[in-house]
Amino acid sequence: MPRDAARLQDLPKLGPKTAAWLRAVGVASLEDLRRRGAVPAYVALKRSVPRTSLNALYALAGAIEGRDWREIRRTRKLELLLAVEDYEHAHPAPRPASRTASLAGLRNIGPAMLRDFELLGVRSVAQLARRDADALYLRLQRLTGKRQDPCVWDTFAAAIHQARTGEALPWWHFTRERKRRQAEGTFVASARARPPRPPKNGVWKNGV
Image 1 (cartoon, rainbow, N blue to C red):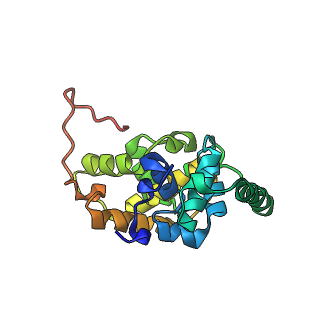
Image 2: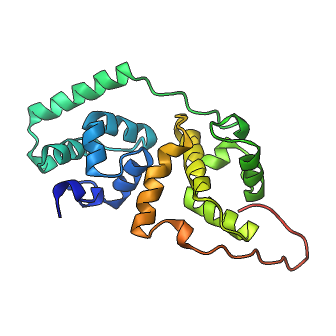
Image 3: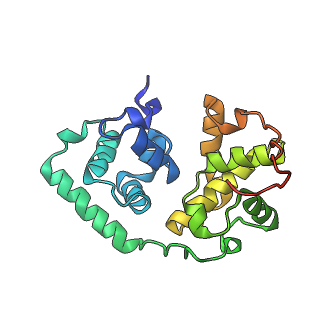
């Protein structure tokens, strides 16, 4: 397999969990990582997942340089640490969305999406930050009994990202990740929508 085609989770010291975190901040491949740079990618990852260790920084730099992270010399590690400090100073973290803020205040969210959130039982930014785009997308299909446009998933992903990090990205920023998963056959849209089951007591309730 060409190195550029290597999966992020196959790179030393990354693994599937870190690869998933990287995809959430817009780094889905080694090519994405090289284009963005180790330091900006690490800072974005650390802001999204505060418990990210410095080893992830060295692993990202090693992936770009074509070497194992353990081969990075101490002087190079110091350069990376100073570069992270400079980058964070030049690019302050965006203020997180208030967890009591209205969902309507999020970018990409209009009346139709607000109705979907109501149907899904998501009524605050704090609730949204704890949700998963795949789960919301599948749940919406099951509640409505019809397949939803895949762009709905993109919008869910963008809104969740903003709720968690405060970074308001356009919904189409997440389209590439969704299309990559569609090509791999791992996107949730492949699941057929199922009609909702009628409640035993005859009373419909919203929520997840």
